[in-house]
Image (cartoon, rainbow, N blue to C red):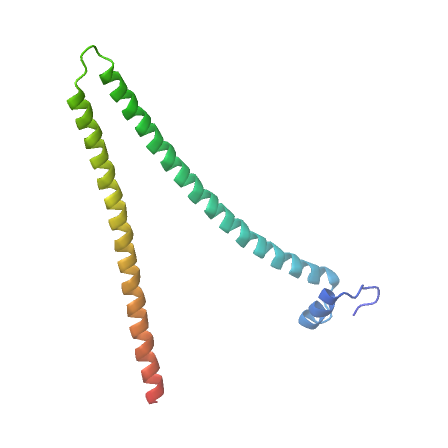
Length: 137
């Protein structure tokens, strides 16, 4: 080590890794490693927050649509002779639309899962062929 350097486990490791380079270079190397790790952690946190924001925005949009529906239904029932049959029909139609939307989401998820299963099966078949080719040699 250079005279005047403080020997710590990290500088001993760095000296083995870098040879007799300056302590500043060693510190820069460790700072670079630390910053890369922190950037990865920050990227994951940003991704998580973006997904949470997307979900909350979707919830807000759904809540506003529900509020608008309930408000319009309430106004229809406030007339002197409300058409209850029409109100019930609106509620049934709304529930059917919700069920259809839910079914579409489920179908999309199942399709994505099927595609992923196909990818994994193709990958498995390729690996098995590769393995059998290597064992034959």
